[in-house]
Length: 310
Image 1 (cartoon, rainbow, N blue to C red):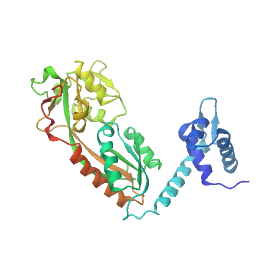
Image 2 (image 1 turned 180 degrees about the horizontal axis):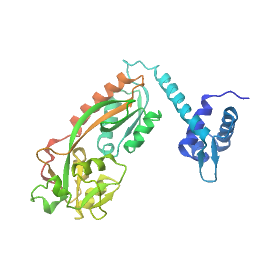
Image 3 (image 1 turned 180 degrees about the vertical axis):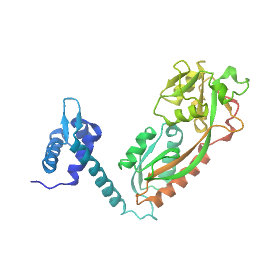
Image 4 (image 1 turned 45 degrees about the vertical axis):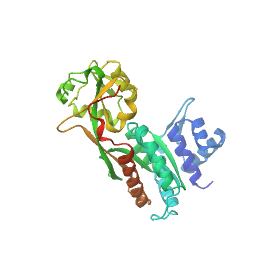
């Protein structure tokens, strides 16, 4: 009988992730027959079937679920071991897989990549834009090294590093620029445009407006902040956007921007990574670079009460 190898575990993890032999083979840069052979070998080693095979997808058996859990733990430790060749106090090199939530990525990611490339020329940035839930899951599975998300997180195995705070601003049609600023309770009576479910920014906006049970006629959903702003410009309703998004998203829309008074809605953006990551010291340095980059290039306190169509 063949011995268990890391190759078996990596191919099985790819199959579990993609749920399809063809997709897993493509992601693993091998042929589908070769992947099938590796999975069959692993099943022989484990003493039972790991997947239920169907024409369009595969599903893990109970044994497969157990093997996947241990496989990911092993692969994570191997990943950490490989990173130990990099000195925690020396220049960062190799790959950095960074996940960024959609309400941050378009506005901060280009500046991050530029700043990081200048500071660490031997480092290859591999960014991925995805929702918070996916960022956290992939960090825990060691498929991402670090994530840029809204804090705080409720995951005890992750370390958090605060980058900056930013306010949410109100976006409404340009014709409404002279109207009084609505309160959070007044917003509940207006047509509020929100991101689709799964985005943490949606939940934050609902929390500020104290909206718990959403009526279908009360809100409309969009897949991006850009879509929401354009819908506001068309007179469909109002929306909230983070301060960093104002410059990019409102420059071509017939909207006005207003800042909430007293205690405005806000969020904290930060980095998260596994506490066991041996490069924590370098990730702290990266956090400091991102913080400075955001302060210099993104956060601009002069956005209040402007008409974006000007």
